[in-house]
Image 1 (tube, rainbow, N blue to C red):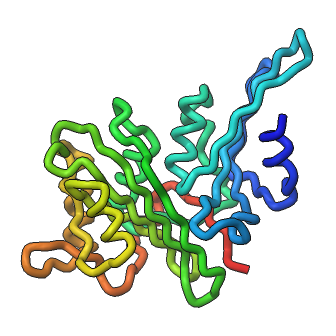
Image 2 (image 1 turned 90 degrees about the vertical axis):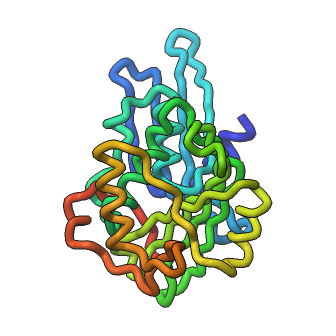
Length: 244
């Protein structure tokens, strides 16, 4: 029960982004934005996922929760706990949108995590709480897909514009976790995008890659400024907490 009280202690700082209650009343799934995370240890994740499982007969309940760096990983956790995937979607009141098809594809990859491909090793959220800067989240994962054998460690870098209208996700592949950590800390080289998988979705992602990157010396790097694409208006909305 200590965990339950620890999460609910600042319940007035938790903003519901998605919730589902089973018809029989036994299960509740919640995805919350924790606005108090900005006063925690630097890098603390700003999303919390909860699963409450009730024993109606015994009038007791079990409680599980985790802090999540980005919404797709939070949704994946809820789905693995038993929440129907379509009911883990965010409410229509939250409207930050992906800038391009590549961002939407990478979100889907993290949300579905096909065949348990990704294992999260580390993450860090940088929220300057300023109207001059957006939020940046880096997530380090181990990739067990055979096509990634040459670069088993990937960094997903999510950047939200300062107006919180859109966000972009970049993918970076490294041969070792130490190299990934060094890049996140130093940013001394351009971010080399990992190759897109084969298939229709991969082709869409490649098209987005061409539109969204500037190639220099055979390496791909993000543009100096991220501009929301017109096609992003049809993509699913994402939640973002506005800076105070």
